[in-house]
Image 1 (cartoon, rainbow, N blue to C red):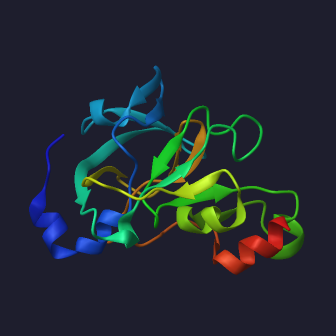
Image 2: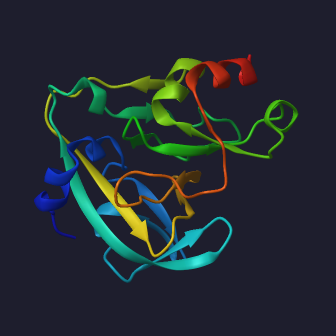
Length: 180
């Protein structure tokens, strides 16, 4: 993997997306740290099986940018033992969220939720104040898919942070109503 400052310079807010380097990603051969993945490596996706990594980059968020502080989803915070260990993601990174009330309220089995919105609705999900620059690994596939970080379904990254998945993205207040 190599740092690509030219990409970050085009859209500095993109640094609010990604996972921290030690996060384990599910691959066909088991869990691998995000920092060890390279272009061409296969990752498991939720709906389309193994897919090759098309691009992987590392973005740095300055500690003065509180909008880029990482969100720590504590081990087990989402229920059913997920995540398998603490999962640190960028605040804008979307997590696929399934809850018994989601189909009743939104007419879909699952919705996407930004990590910072989970911090509002879940007691064991917290925004962590960064004292040093935070590094986020951003994994892109040929098409956007859901992949697994520490067992949690998360989005792969698109070049400008857009979302091309067929799921609704909830705002904080909608999530709070859904899990209340």
